[in-house]
Length: 162
Image (cartoon, rainbow, N blue to C red; front, top):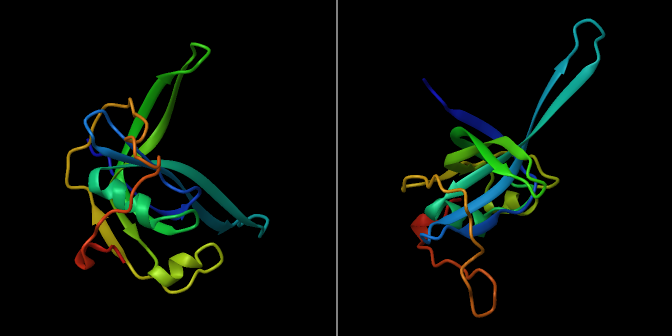
């Protein structure tokens, strides 16, 4: 059996960073991918857009949260996961998400700042998770901070992902 997903798309929302009870960082974000083609029978141009939720863990989650924003172009490699839960009405719900192994930034820093309207030449950088993924779906609120916001992360120049 093989479960591998490779997607290129743009973030549909800013990443949301939370922490598991174990202290492991978890970033969730959505990406949109599209496919265009021409219908051979009608010569009509068509487009199919998919919206996919992505989850990243550990150091990768912190990097994603700090550097990515809505509109940024990324390449995500990971595996397909079925998330299940019970909603407020007691109904069983489920959806497929991608559990990211690697998130590659597909734009330079300058391009990322203008990514909502820019589709220029891409430069690739990547940051991979080094820890095993947590199977626990019980995310907690961010760790309490004095000012109730997530602090900047101290990163060496060699670690900057673009």
